[in-house]
Length: 359
Image (cartoon, rainbow, N blue to C red):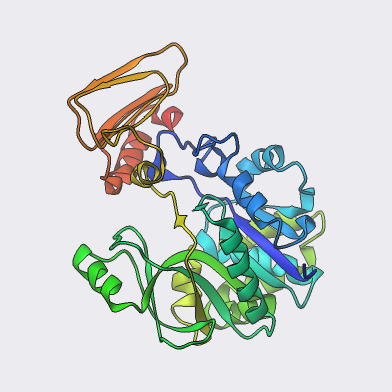
């Protein structure tokens, strides 16, 4: 295990598409979504232990969830939990972690991963990460993991690569969530993979790319570098984030840079981004229903029926393709695959008088 390998777990999201199970006080990454006694964050942390020293794992999260991270990952030192004062998407998150890591190790190789994804065949995952890390040691490449697609999925981003026999493939294009007809063409072509959102790069490679493509962001980080790692860090980060625009690392850097490569991988992966994805990966009854808690279903298929309150029975009849969920103070009934509506649901609840208590 190389000592210069670092892992950054991005745990700052709110999981809007997974509301009302995922709430502001306890978003998706802190929940035992898989029913195995561990949160998604804990599963992700454990997944990376064969890859790097545990003192080299950093978690970036919103400041209101720092205590949750410490509770769920007690092995982490306080300095390994980076608190964001506001959500500014993934470019600021990655910049923050990268500058912190460079202070410790100027030759660091960093693996950046969302904290809320599902990965099966973990031995293959570790092997793939190891190959990509070796390729990133030269500090001259930006690498992303691409998952070999198994279906024409419209909910994922795609990466097109230039085919060759090398471990890494030069990236040609990025495409966000295509229509089904285009997704089918991508699958047939053989030179597209799903964008996993997992990145591997040398610390100098990513900071150089940020300096080139997000100069305003890096300028304000550079102005405040002396405060990182000191008691003044919190105040400095508040200033930095206030002056940084909200932009993803994909739009802000990866789609612009010329040294971007993809490492194709075959391990089973899901971003667990919606109720539909949870239905896909979970054990179901003979009618393709996912049921949890005290529930009874009749003449119902292809649905999710969930009751979370002990002592409360939920009965459903005559449904096809629905989510019916009881989550304490919120009951939801909607079409299971309409994940596009969840942001509207949350925004409408937010606009209600007193609606904040349901978020």
